[in-house]
Structure formats: C-alpha cells, structure tokens
Length: 115
Image 1: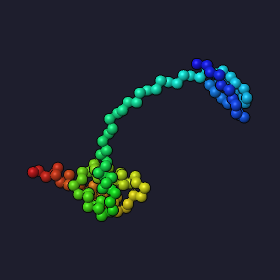
Image 2: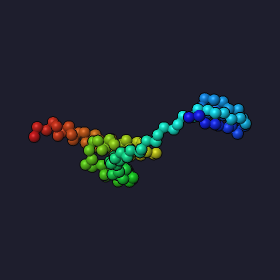
Image 3: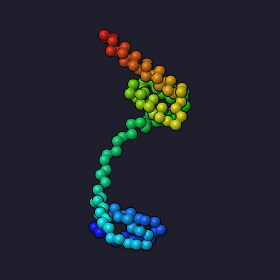
C-alpha cells in the first residue's frame, strides 16, 4: 500500500527504503501490518518450585533441617535455585551437597542390598 509521508523534522528520514529530505514529502510503499494472531492461551505449567523457594527463604539452620527426606532431584534443584540467587549462602550449598551425597549413598545401599 502506498502512503504519503511528509518529513517535518530537521533531518533526513528513511521510510520504506526511500530517503525523504527535511520539509519534503514522498509517496512510499508501506507494507500492511500482518494480521494480529489471536493469543493462544497455553495452559500454565504448575509451579513445582514453590515449596523449594519457601524452604530456601529460611535461614541456614531451617534449610538444613528441611532437607531430610527430599529426593536427589529435589536436592539438585534446590542447589540450582540457591546458586542462582543474588547471594548464594555457602552453608546452604554445603548442606545441600552433603544431603545429595547422603541420598545417593542411601540409593546405592538399597540397590546393593539383596533383601
């Protein structure tokens, strides 16, 4: 679609691949806007990190106490979240590493136990 564009600025203006000098106007090809796509609402993924964020909101002692019984995957995700924070706490990271090692050791002991 052609459209008349007038340059009322003090500088050269470029529209549709054409230069328009200050104070002049020109008919230029301006492509039609693409049709607006309907917003498709995708189902929101459930926030599985919510409880982990709540646990990390506590102090080091509270986080360390809450690590018992968590799976290895949850411990790894907790470590990722803590490390990605503004100020990763060394004590929390060490507790997460120790809990991950303990969980892996327990999993190995379960696999090697013939009963």
